[in-house]
Image 1 (cartoon, rainbow, N blue to C red):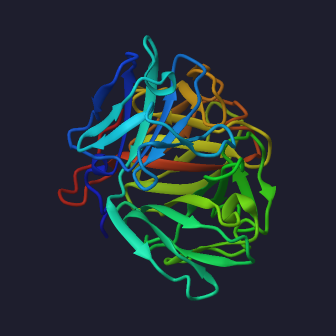
Image 2 (image 1 turned 30 degrees about the vertical axis):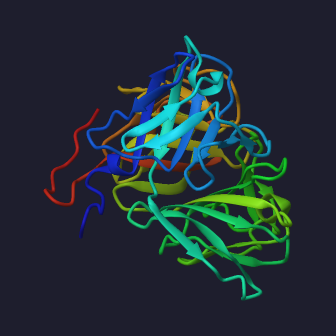
Length: 353
């Protein structure tokens, strides 16, 4: 059995920390491999700026704010280009302020697609960018707020997690996650627990070809521009699942099959923050620095509260904080690899941190 289909995860995901200057500058990602991002998510580390999300499908002048329900903004003050080895920024303080430090998370899709299925009344046309190898697609479509419409996502595999945003309106970021099911949602710009929403995904699980939306404006606004970021499990590279906290500093171990470069977690039972950590903010264990996905606060370092070890084949909780490890609470997670546990080509195990 193959351990992984991606020997070098840096071809598809890289985290990068950088320092702002207040003037235009290009940034090269830190990996040994060049990667041109298709989706870049930036958060100021030492200040209270918003999360800025830009992708190649909408275009570099189109920006969404991850911690609010704001509609899409058109501006040339943020990212000005996706480059073969990184990205170029203008001078806005949310992404490149003088004296400010930043975290960025970068994913590659890379292959354009267009699917004209609107002649079938149950389907909506879609277009976007996809990597079937990395299990990631960016899907653009125009909503019609009708009961159960299906949209082609391009993955060739069943999505486990989908981020939806109505670009045209002040609707929240709505998250589908396989672990909580197709009749419930999470909201990226809120710390809220899971909520019922049978209309969001039409109470229908995605397939390897299509995802479904219902008559909710968050996922299918009438004549409004919608964007969806779709993720499927890829062995040795990405994993989406759930765990139950134990409230102990000898916390839950979550197996991923790779050494994580990035882990996002969210409690689904209780109103708690989205928690994001990566291997650049935390080059050693125990990891204690994290950012809140739904807030503007700077990097937090809570020793013993939400600490975590990033291991060679998963992650283990070392804190008892509510955002990550309350006893009996259920959490969902999204993780991407720094390296597979064992490479496919050479069968060499990865080293511990």
